[in-house]
Image 1 (tube, rainbow, N blue to C red):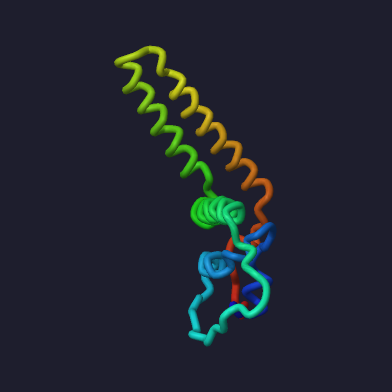
Image 2 (cartoon, rainbow, N blue to C red):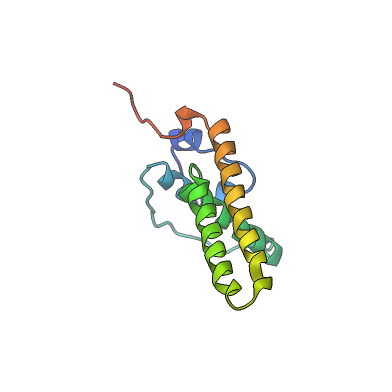
Length: 137
């Protein structure tokens, strides 16, 4: 069972199946997150709908939430780092085989993707949603 205050739910953008990650998203916004022990009862009717397909979706959602909470306002820090690492790797491999320069191209593409993501974030971010303000005095 999960309980949240109204201000937490008003402050978090929920879409898709992100409801699973409300505690993580709330903590990323600066809210205090805690747990209370409750008594659970065994299921008496029906069966679990949790299966392998849902595990895959949950894992992909986990990666998305991780990326958004860590690099949501600065995607180039992640994508650019991956791109630069691939470029360095490509040049090190090119010492042994000139045919491996395709890795450098992939690195450049990651950096370009990071720049596009930065432009997207800069154009779509709402300044009042960058930080949570509990109260104005």
